Length: 125
Image 1 (cartoon, helix red, strand yellow):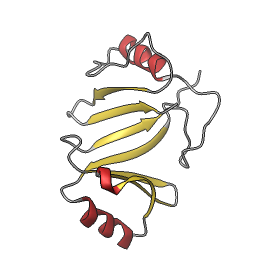
Image 2: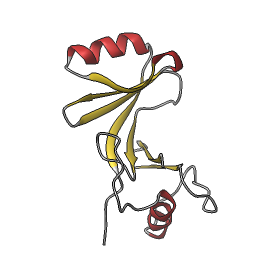
Image 3: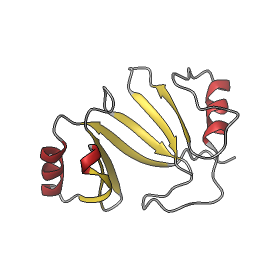
Image 4: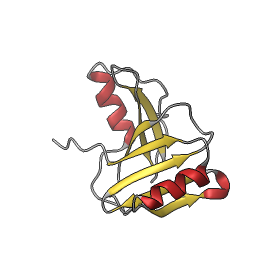
């Protein structure tokens, strides 16, 4: 049984995206995606990915992207976000914000670990 929940990254709630971008560049990260004019960037260093988000959510969160590898390339097969949501629910995990089970394609849902850390399962395809 496939246990993959997608490519992993950390999504950071930042106060000033330009300052954060400059800081992470000093650590060796480079801009991989996003739009700084919309206050979000995806940065990478080797196979480590972080997202910088200014004013989009309250807490830092773990993020998983079903159907993608760490270069945002499609992987097949992959487990759809709605299937993952139902598997998590059947395992007793509380779904905080649900993906529409009647939809297809891009969707996301949010859960929290026992310490209140948000985990976003975010499918882009």
